Every structure is written in C-alpha cells, then in structure tokens.
Image 1 (tube, rainbow, N blue to C red):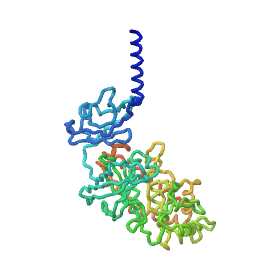
Image 2 (cartoon, rainbow, N blue to C red):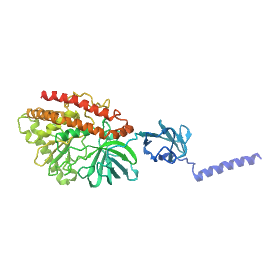
Image 3 (cartoon, rainbow, N blue to C red):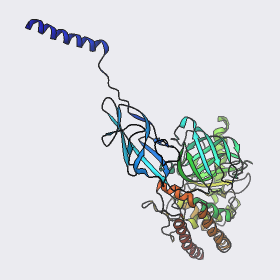
Amino acid sequence: MFFRFSILILFSVFFISCNQYDNGPIHLDDEKELISFQFEQEFNSSLSETVVGVIHGSTIRLTIPDVIDTKSLIATFEYEGEAIYVNDELQESGITQNDFSKPIIYEVHAENGSVKTYDIKVILLPDVQSKVPHIYINTDENAPIDSNEEYVWADIEIEGKGVYDDFQGRTKIRGRGNDSWNQPKKPYKLKLDSKASLLGLLPEKKWILRSNYRAESLMLDAVAFRMASLLDMPYTQHAIPVDITINGEYVGSYIFTEQKEAKENRINVVDGGLYLNLDVYMHKPPGLFYSDYFDLPVMIRYPKLDEVSPTELASELSRIKSDFHIMEEPIADNSFPDNNYLDNIDIDEFVNYMIVYNLSLNQEINHPKSTYMHKHKDGKYKMGPVWDFDWAFGYNSQTNTHFNNPNQSLLLEGDMIGDVFFSRIMEDPVVQTRYKERWEEFKNEKYAELITYIMDYTETISESYDLDYAVWGQGVGSVDLAAQQIINWLNVRVQYMDVYVSEL
C-alpha cells in the first residue's frame, strides 16, 4: 500500500515536471499602461461635454470649467494590465467615483505584480470667453511634439474671433528654442504646406508661437517689438496674442509672430545681402565662424550655405567672412573712431537698436545671444530685428522674476564678447550725439504711445491671461497688476536713461 502510494506521488511529480517542460514556465504579463482617460458627460451630469485627458508620460491632464464640482467625478478609461487602484480601492471604468479636487494617483497593476503610477491633474479653467484668436492644432494620430528639430504633421484651424480671417489648413509643427524648449510651457514653430496670410500678416509658410513662460505679463516681447516699431526699425516682428489648443489640450496664451528669415515678406535682403545671428549658442553648420577682431560668434542665416554646392561653399564662406572683417576692422583699429568705420555700419539703426535694448535692459547682447544684423547688397550693416526679451526688463534668474534693478547698466563693462564690441561703438562721440537726439525724440514723442499700447494690450489679453494662469500658475495672477509692474518699471527706467544720456 505504502509502495503504491509512493509510486503515485513520484508519478504525479514526474507528470507535472514534464508538463511544465512541455509548455514552458508559467509567464505572468508585465503590461501596465493607461491608454485613455476621460470624464464622459454620460456619467457626469455636471459636464456639458466629455473632457478627454491628455497623457504626457506618467501625467494625465484634463482641463474643465472651474464651475464644475470636481469632488465626485467618474472617470472612464482603457488600460492594459491586471487592475487599477486608487488608494487600494479597485477602480471600475464608468462606475468608480473619486475626489479630483486634490492630487490623485492611479496605479496600474500588471499580472506579475509590478505597478505603474499616473498623476491625474485636473485644471480648472475660468469660465470666460477670450477675445484673442484661438489656434487649434491636431497632430496626425495625436503624435506628441517632443522635439525641437523633428517636425510632425498636423491640421491647423484658426478662429479669428471676428477680428481676423478664419483659417484651416495643413502644417508641420516642432518645438523651438534653446533654454525656452526646456521650460514646462513649450514654444513652437509652424511650417505650412503652402504660403498663407495668417492673422492679417503677409503670406509665408513659417510662423512662430512664443510661449512667454517667464513673462509675468505675457507681453514682454510685444512691448519690446512695439518699442522697435515706434523707432521705425525695419523688419520688426508683429506680436499677436493667441490662445493655443494642441490635440484637445489648452496649452496657454502665446504670441504669434513671423519666423525670422530672409524672404521678400520678411527680412528682405534677398537682393544678395546678408542676414546674421551673433549668438554663443552656435549651431547648424556650415555657416559658422568667429570674427577676426572681436571674436564674435557669427551664424550665417542668409544666404543659406547648406544650399550652396560643395565646390562653391568655401569661397562663399570666405566672401562673407571678408565682408564682416571689413566692417569690424576699423572699429577695432587704434584710429577708431576717427576713421571710415561708419562707411560700413548704419549709425541710426545702431542707435535705435541700443535704445530698445537699454530701455528694456535686455542684456542678451553682452554674451551675445539672439543678436541679429542684416545688410542689403552693397549697403551698410544694420542691427536687427530685435528678438527674445525673456531675460530683459530687470530679469533675476535666481528668483525667476522681472522688474528688478531699473537703474542697472545695460553693458556690463567687462570682458564679455558682445559687451566689448557694443561698448566700443558707443565710445564714438558721433554715436553718442545721435543717441541723445534719438532718445529725446522717442521720450517726448513716442513713449506715451508705448504706455497706451501696454494698456490696450492688457485689455485684449485679459481673459486669455486668466486661462493661461489657471494652467501654468506663472506670474502674479492678475494681468492688470502685471501691466502696472511693467509701466512702473519703465517709468523708473526712463529716468535712468535720462541720466545715462546726460553722462555720454
């Protein structure tokens, strides 16, 4: 009896072992992912429409009107895995109710016991109607825009709000910028499939969406661009406030503006002229070089050397470097300013440029960064267009605030490359005299217009500002307060400018 029982046990073990060997070891799945997440109107009577969540990695964002009670919402979702839990409570799609008025984490459990977590962020948007145009962008197959180099295709629709023409079309979109691309609120570049006039601007393919993430007022670029236009600087960008929704997610208030490029409808130096960018973030060869005398980092934006044949590239690069050398040499020479250096650089545009940068305290030119020059064929070098004022208006990188130190000098009088070059030109008594004259003209005839522009812009973006603040929480929470900060700071800065010119 005992013998037969032992044989039975051995046979059972043998059978199980063989079965495992034949079919392989038991495998538990590792799949654990939320595929979709939304609040459907069918299960949430307080909603007027279904709100679809946008999944960014391990974060899911949903934007709903702030009049909705978020303490008892029911989510519907699709997932891969064994089960979903919130605080150890099993979740059932379209059934389980949760309090979304506070941070909430969904845990997706796999068969093998591993877990993936998702932070659910419900953003309450003010129940307002923004006055500014709204741009809707839907990428093909909801592809993420996660590169500032690679484009993705998308449909674009612009709601002009009765102020501008509506528009529908196809575009490519990618991120843009260096430091700004690393911020939570991303800037973008659009490239339409064909030229079009958008928001009343001259027709072209390429357009820029400035994110204004650092700007408490969402209007620092706009104010600086207005300074330049009041000084009649050529090729100054326009600043049109817009709201942006990407793949169903409202992403904030942006500035819509032209791409800085050499085109007939943009920076029109296509007569054989030059368009250059002085920037320590040198990239995109082959049009890169350091100047002979001031070691300025020069990127050739036009002509486009990547379109020049290899046999002509060296000679074309040499020609442009030589032309820049001719402009730069007399500025560095011991005979400066008593030489012919003004034969090659436009004194009026230099002065206009320096007034914009001094009044706004944009110290980017000290590095230099985002500093542009252009010239027509056989013409003089001109500064501009003006660009990138995130770090202007008394910006303090430690506190991430603007409107500090309104009496600070623009040029640092140190050994930074841009500082040395621009300070050198400012030593010329002829430049100083013209600077004084131009400043007095601007202060007496144009400054009041600038303040009026700020107040009008503030009224225009009022509701858009509230929406943006609800999403990003950047700034002071009130566009009126932010605008007053700009005006107060500028009023003190004007007094500084008066002292500055009196000491030239």
